[in-house]
Image 1 (cartoon, rainbow, N blue to C red):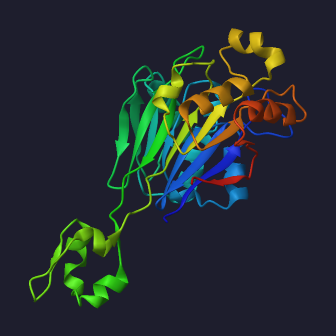
Image 2 (image 1 turned 90 degrees about the horizontal axis):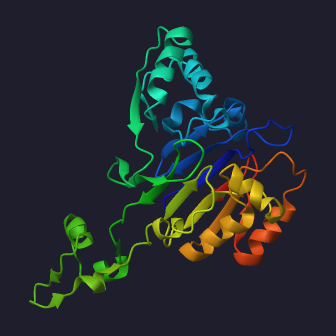
Image 3 (image 1 turned 60 degrees about the vertical axis):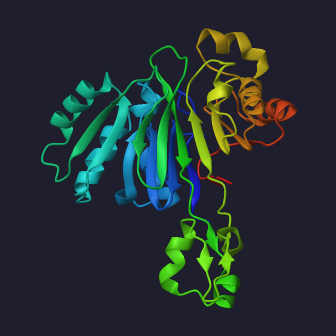
Length: 305
């Protein structure tokens, strides 16, 4: 099975602490690396996870609060000093384009690579990136400013060849791709060997959803139905439920409710308020509703499976 990993670079909220960095993650899927959000301190966390800066193909910004985007211009500057030549794609709310251009004119002149900006409509659920192996969709969220999450989906792969059956019928290698694409085989005696006897089903496509800052949205579970792994902000515990509602954030219990209703496999909690020295209380609340809940911490690497 091809790698599909989530690297946690930062899982704190707006107020800096010695324990947590501002929001940032890297999603590795089929040898491609995508960054989601880029708060302050992201470059240091990249170093610690030993992800090569040159591997980052694109950056997806969920919204324009500083703890989710203020690290981007510094990282672009570093890319320039490292001699990057490949285009960096930036997906973000359209309001960010002018600001990013001004920052680049001030701090990043003379780059030997292009920064290509892709405006994101945070109000619609749509595919904004697609290649032969995956697609990336927006997930509209409800925050104090325009905000969206991102959903990474693998595309189905071809079935696996049953080598023992292929050898038994002496099927030439030149026909393997045809069989993977559904062709039956006819022996020299005229016997039809159905494709299902020649192949084994491929693994089910995996998916990862990143739900950044948002208040509790009961309808969100419909967009996340059967997602393999979900990261959902869990800034507060239930004692601060009204505070979460006021500032358009979620509690850990609310995140777990979304995960349960969406029938996801795994829930990752994050974006913790600085008021918590220990997030175990958040985890306990989530597990009471959705047992397969986990705290995310800087340096964690999660396999999407």
